[in-house]
Length: 496
Ligand SMILES: [Fe+2]
Image (cartoon, rainbow, N blue to C red; front, side, top):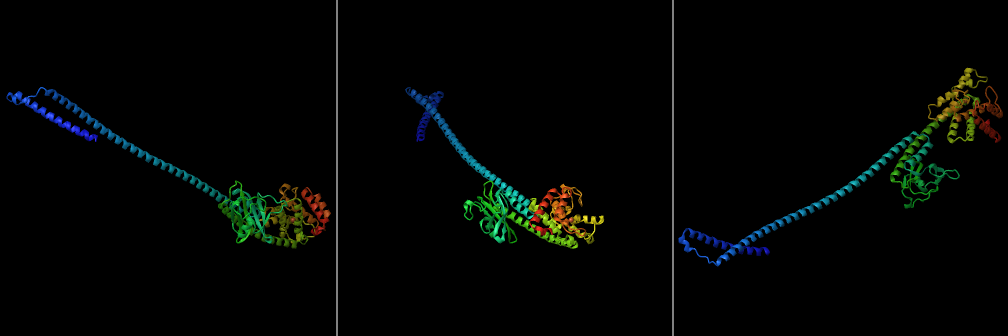
């Protein structure tokens, strides 16, 4: 509205100004021609003198209006410029705002991307940790498998089957139970972290009951992740400990159950996982193979041992005076060993070495073995070869080295004057020293082709006389005690 009004005013002023100018220029033009052509002077209208100030005033006003118009145009132009600049500024601001929003969006996207990358990093770290754990477990399993494969002793295998997974899976308690078929029981054969029973007897559970019983019946491995969240098994074990978490696996040879390995609770308080159960099942499988191999080896050894026993019978058949000798030496030696507190492994060595100690006599001529008179030096030397011959007969066989050494050393003396090697006391096995004393006692109290038997007391006196030179004094002392106990308890059958 303001613009239209101003325009109309301007238009009117322009028309007036144009009229005034036309009139002025026309008058001036005629005035000029009159000056050049005086004849025309009368044609020039005269301007009343009263009109001159008015014209001057109009002219001034026209000038002012012109200036005002110019100023108005300048202001309008300036305003338009300002408006354009404002619009430009607003557009610029809008553009900046849009850019800012875009930047914020990009910043958000960057933050989200960073979070995602951080999450991925965490995932990668977890995956790496899992992979490392898996590699460590595989490595440990490989080592366990190798160790089990190298072991041929059943008891050692039982021990390793518990101790290795207990260490690997950081368990508080581990035990191996073997089935007692006739009693329908499972008995703890080896354990770690389990308190001994007060009576010294082994822990046992009824087959089919409890954790190990379930594993034995179902022949499947089992995971109880959290005992508090299940009702199948009681929290308290029948062996007296509180269970929080457990894994258990059967040891199977073909379809036959030969044992159950169980791990109870973890030292760090966490729960066992399904991976732990799988690992234990794999170790149980490796254990089964190792036990199977040990059983096969045991069977082979038993077969060979039977064959060797047949050789002993053949030796005793050749040498009628030594009939029953090996058996008696074995019995005396076992009694001495028990009195001296030897463990089961040492007694097992004595048992086998006692039976085998004179096997080398199989190569000694019958005429020498049964010669009724004293032996000459050549004959005696042939007799002295029998410990080494016996050692060589047994050498290729996978017997305990100690059994072979006992056979080799059973005629050695602690003063170093024995044969075949002249070993001194510290080089002679205790089991061999026991066999030596028992062997001598039986030889003295048995009839020989070249002499009558000594009485028990005479033999003990002779052995006592050689205590500290031929025989170990402690062994002599125990042998004397054992023989006196036998004679006073009526165990004379052993002495005949
Ligand atoms: Fe002998």
